[in-house]
Image (cartoon, rainbow, N blue to C red):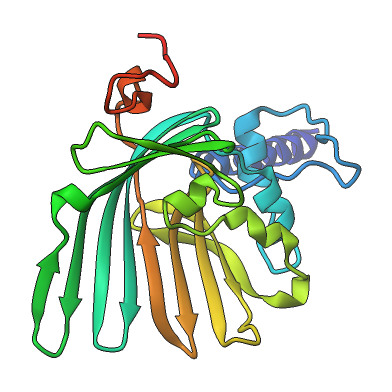
Length: 264
């Protein structure tokens, strides 16, 4: 009888130790911002657990075969402001453009803040005069353009020029149109503290390779790079959103005409 009691006690103790071990392991599991994909049938899989449990357990491994599904799940924010830096590089020099971007719905405003050209041979820089800085507001159908502090603006049809084109950034959703064998690499990467999905294309017939870093949190392009025969010819970066969002002033033309009025 005593032996049975001892046996039951040892079994109970073992179960208790195992349960404590499981709880401790779950408490120290790192939280992840990785993409959770819907089921194969296109609907979210049902789960009795919490969203935190799902994010820690059910996550997709990013590979060239799965990255397009992950990219398709990302959504750009409806409204935001951010700074974008673009570098164009060539043999013997480079040009850096600093842009300020404001987005609300279909409307995107892009302001050139500074444009600096650097010449390697002479190690000299020249800065474009502020009067030549380009300002645009586009809604995908029409684009309003003016320069410097002028109050004169021109309205043109947007045509094939997208809001991304106005920002001088690639459209990362183009990844969805690639054949899988055109994707050389895909995985999760952290860039300056920003959790990203990284995609690199195979070299195309013109010798170009495109690299994308897309923020998992914001659904926006964080960085991009274009290489020709292994040498970078284009780079962009935008690591964070501004604390304040857009206002009506961002979508007001220099003569005071309001294109989009936002709530205060």
